[in-house]
Amino acid sequence: MLDNPRSSRVRTVAQLFRKEVRAETRRFLLEGPQAVSEALRFRPELLHDLFATPTALERHPELGEAAAAADLPIVFVTEQVLEAMADTVTPQGVVAVCEQFPTSVKDVFRPGAGEDAGLPGLVAILEQVRDPGNAGTIIRAADAAGAQAVVMTGRSVDPYNPKVVRSTTGSLFHVPVSVGVELASAVDRARAAGYTVLAADVSGDELPVVRSDGMLDGPTAWVFGNEARGLTAADLALVDRAVRVPIYGQAESMNLATAASVCLYESAFAHRS
Image (cartoon, helix red, strand yellow):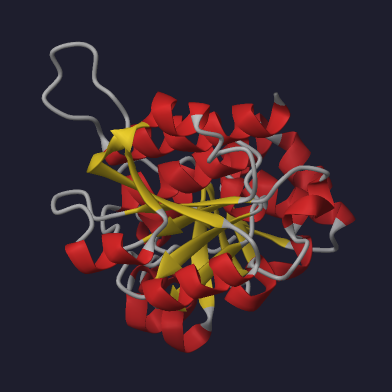
């Protein structure tokens, strides 16, 4: 039982809250039974340490079984130690240290990548998306819509930020995520691979019109911009068409993650119709 919240091992885990430590160690923090369960199911080889309170393991015996199958020892900790490791105010009793696993943008836009699933390709590109909750929710929505990948430019939030990881609810382990690329480079690679590149922007044509024009039928890369400022004129000049989600009610605007979900699902519907 690890019972000292001030021990060096606990401090080492807690330091993964900091981006510079994550960048140096190439590791990140997983919190909660859902995220840890998805990691054990899809990428168990990436897990280095698994910490849990006895109470949490009693509530989630399947975690113990999955850890044993992956030959990953569980370190039992006290509630105080778990709180010192976790980023959340009310942690759920399970924390793990995981190796980062970004995907190369070359692999995202390699020829034929979309056809691997028997459907045209679908990719989300995040440019200057800074809010961790929005970024994580878009990764989750991309996973749900059957997208092949998410590309996060170098000016977007770190996908291994604890809040981003929690917001994906495990989808981080389902859909490849590329990091650090510049928007212009991502667009060039997408177009070279045969993708139509669309930008979600309030200045664009309405989404139903764009779909009726057939622009969602083939491989599609959606670009989503900053929550407050959107995309710049220079960003919009890179893409094939700007598209807006119409607002039929009295809402002043739409949350970025919600709009991204609508756009991704419109492409998913078009690909399957």
